Image (cartoon, rainbow, N blue to C red; front, side, top):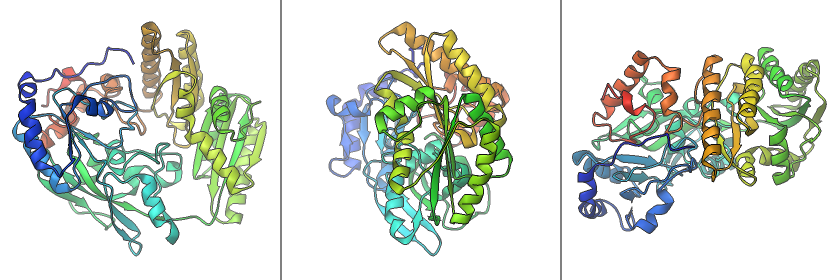
Length: 479
């Protein structure tokens, strides 16, 4: 993205005290729990957004809730900005620091604290990855449902911050639908418990508020998540269409019919070619759009669902229907889909949008997206969670050409506004971060934003937690 996005100016008084702050923080953490040398800070200067880089003042790597609380208590006392960081896989700039900020990284908080099969839940530290949880309970026939493409690396803490989803969220929901409780450390070091192993809590739904807070209400150090029994069977099927519009209409009709597969993933022709060249997944190359539809259950259940889906697909002119024949083939199909972002990065720089639209608007938004990108002389590869309308157009550009980068940013902004105007929203699972911050006024009116900022300020009156994110810098009237 271009340099149009601003950060809050660093506070000179904080920078002048850098040496003392580093010494004080070191006393609060276990050995090797603080990074402060400039060369060692480089890995923390950005996240997967990568378009902006800022070296933080220091990086704290706590191992316990108590250490997180001690660091926050100190930063609150001296008004030092704090940037929470999970694995740094944010695609919206959610973990990019500032020069006067302390990054609190959760990469050392990797313990699975409790697995309770009787209550179908697990309690883990915030640095545990999604895949770690599923692997820990696999032998007993359970798994943790949210599966972002980065599930090998992304952490529970980051997933809670952005309310992340994944390919299988169509059936199982996103993080908030699979979260039962958290331990949250507030900016002044206070530790509170929200939710637990039970299904509901008395009082306000603060757990629902915290899921998706983008690190601005506190720092989640532990989470209790729902475990789900593995289905009897699962089968992905490839559906190839002549055009993206036909594929989009098919998705809307499948969901409208009442059939709910576990996943419906979309790729247009550029995305198919990119992913096939990388993963050799066996995708058809003679189609304009591809749907990966996965059903699960017993054999009769899967056959019944597939029969209905195939019938709908035929009404939309489907060219190719290919059922997976083995576990190896299924793994290859999903490897291709989950490698889409990395595979695209092999051929060009790109920015990934994250707008969500009503399913009835998929075809319209796909067509208009192509028109926007064509008008600006760019290319786009569309790959996204079609079942819930969460679109991920990858806008290809040359990052070494400032004019090309500016056109890519313009295209991204126009596409996100298109999603909102079609009845959708700016983000489905990547969060607002820096990327969409200045578009929030297109989604919300001033009273709506003021109310959100008032809630944020109630948790953090000095706006120390993850500054420069989510809300326009000129609109912090509730601070």
